[in-house]
Image (cartoon, rainbow, N blue to C red):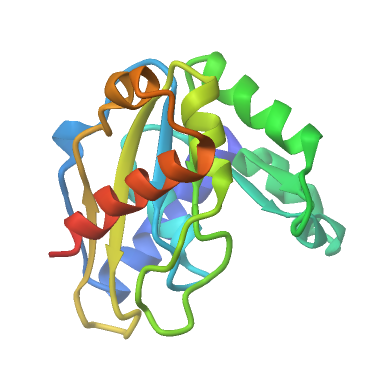
Length: 190
């Protein structure tokens, strides 16, 4: 058993009963091929919650500082995480993300770039649109509907893939594409 599978089982056994996690929409998740999984960001626990509820292993970009933390920095690559320098265009992280997608794997992103302080879904950054436009991956929206309160229900809703063929035909830029992805996430919360 690899570290990712072990960690997924362990984290699931703790978080699922603690937050009474309810998952819906898994039928929308492609069984194979590259998937850009875009979720809203309301808590530090969002990456593990998405990781344990997604039906396939998910690679995440994690802020570069986390890779400098003793022990954690050594574990993160085994959990399919790779560093991104925030606040700038990190070409290496963009290349790595595209590689994940082009190899037919799942890349998890929080398009807002940071946690929402209010719980409301904010404006997404262009990164999600960049990956959606530069790859052939299916773009799957995901809504995490909280709050993260012990023994209160936490919902994770996966939606149908965003119709990227239409977006690419319209020749929309990365910002507008991210906007459309965010609209799909918002719809899942209603």
